[in-house]
Length: 145
Image (cartoon, rainbow, N blue to C red; front, side, top):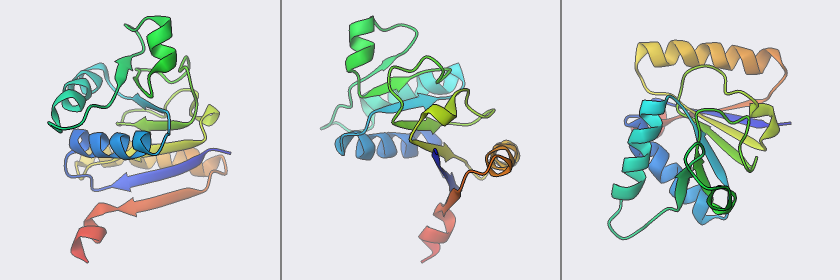
């Protein structure tokens, strides 16, 4: 069963996603990131620019050649349904990601924005109603320590 984790009170979703993807891919994980097209474009730029000394190989699912798509440890995709691998899925927001149950892990990123939190509550209910165990990581509580 997919492990579901919510990371709440993310101050900057794109910067946090970059660090999360860097850490996971550095540990050998293969990651698919889903979200709205504008968010995926912004993440693409951020992955190129967030660290002057590092590069995280990544591609867009809709634009990459099949060989590049298969070899990329990080794939940016508006839908996870046709993802080339199913290890870690990072959702930048919106509705429940299609085909999330195919992945070993799902990480939901949620800011303090009221709209983002409302959508996250709906996704949380969706997973909980289907029996998924959910782990909660509150970044605000972590910073307060």
